[in-house]
Image 1 (cartoon, rainbow, N blue to C red):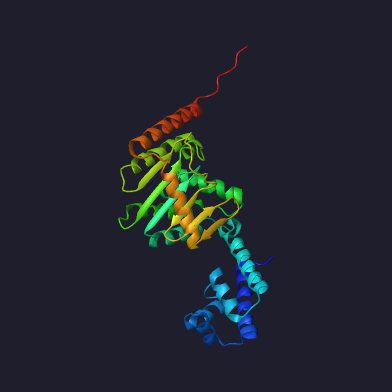
Image 2: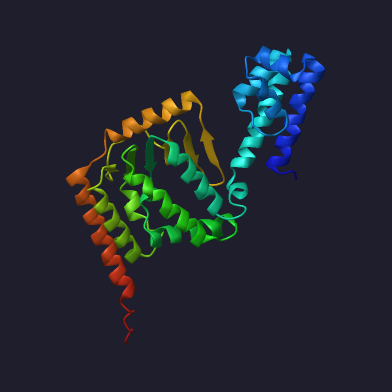
Length: 292
């Protein structure tokens, strides 16, 4: 089976064929018809720039392709993007490359908005917590384990928390503090990190258990600048479509309406820390000998 990279090359060759055989224009004239800079057509055809859906729509429409051909090419591109976004492909060398990608897009973003249901956001994970997350994900996805490299990059990403030029919002459900992806004693330390977060400039909130939700969020998501990332079990949706960005920003606003912050958030963190501490103590108590 061909890789996403090989399929992208085949796709670029097909776009070239459409320009030459259907539009019957050279690259410069075709770019002008598309309303693009002259170099854009060359970059796409020579695999130096990946076209998005709007590019393909303009390309095929300008070439005078039929509706069925336009939809065929758009569907082909969607399939390539889905395969490229799969965890199997993204993590084929381990988590390091994916963490580097996050670091890069977060570095240029002026605003980062995060919502998580059952996990503490990576931007505020302590090393021990993150280590358990990476190990579990690598085992489940059956990809190379490069935990220490990925962990180092994740810790570097946290410098964004202290960048005064950035606006950062972290919103979690209380369930993220009650589902342990790590041993309970690590969870205690992780919650201590979140308590310290209350003193930073980051906007941090918790949606308490039992809250009546204004809308049901089916999954966690990140809004990084003008990009939305949504993780599923087998893939990651990465979109820059304006309508998608508007939808997820609106969803985030709705969820913030039922969140607690400051002292009310502190009370939840303390309560969950006490529960994790009790669980850690129970783990350390040896089982009682049964007498008859």
